[in-house]
Length: 417
Image 1: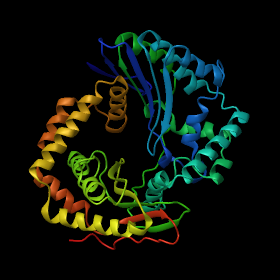
Image 2 (image 1 turned 180 degrees about the vertical axis):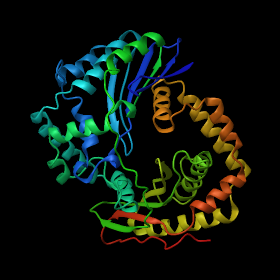
Image 3 (image 1 turned 90 degrees about the vertical axis):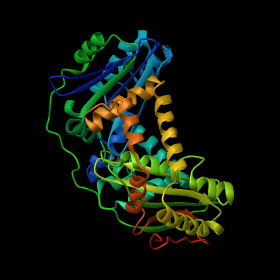
Image 4 (image 1 turned 30 degrees about the horizontal axis):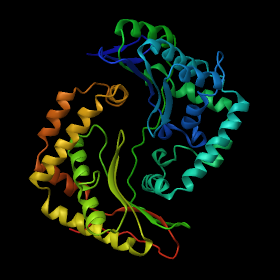
């Protein structure tokens, strides 16, 4: 059974006891990410994520790592555009220890200036690593160009220039502004005593006080960019983007099914036609990124530069045909069964269940039961997916590509109708 609680300081807690497992997965979810940073703070969310592992008043960085290694547990963190998550998975007998260490990291990290300068060098290497990998970088580039002049466009890692300006005071200011109890969710899933876990969380996190919340409230504007960047690489890497849906949109499940049919699986239209039938690309897929007030639907492929323009034109042709014909009964049925199967299989992992609990609470302020999700998936009709195809696939593409300079690529001007 899922339990939801809110502490007097506003911090939200979601617990799920699963008595037949021996693991406990826990996550601390902070509702802040790169889109909530001011220009001079660019990269601070991600840098903070690193710094919370660099030592507290009780333990140095090595000792923090040894705690989890010594009990066979796992601990990690990641930063996104809209939230940051610190998560751990341990045996049930070590749950209280893991929770106390995470609390120590969150509230007692030293943010030592010497460690900070060293970690900034690590992040600079991370930036270089992504720049050297166009297959990854092209996905950041399409967001940067499509939502230009909005905080959503900024890179999660920041820039060389912005990192230089981030000192200990800047990190403390950001914590004060964004790491507020009313902006934090703690989710715990696995073999737990819910009452004891609630008491432990309140003892460790209940003393934090509310402060004034701040963040980006500007809605991003979709800009159909056309950008080609020459790179000394063997393949061309191409992303085509169109406006998507925010994560509470009533057509969200129709969008997931649309994406499954078009390009998110090995049985999808794009994969079967471009890779399997024609052998024009090794990697080709579509995806949908949903944010709190907008979304981006994207199609990616990596191919021989000499035939990449032909792949772009084939994608345009396929989408135009799809707009005319819509989806078939069989396609929609397979997509629904695939989605339901992946959802139910994911629930066999305490880590996945914990993530679902945390994200639902943080982003939706409610829990969505599996039966409700299955009913919503089954309720999607061919007509709804067909209408969404017409809505999404119209107007100009946002186009970004990276490849050899002797094969510059261009986007089709408009979706064929």
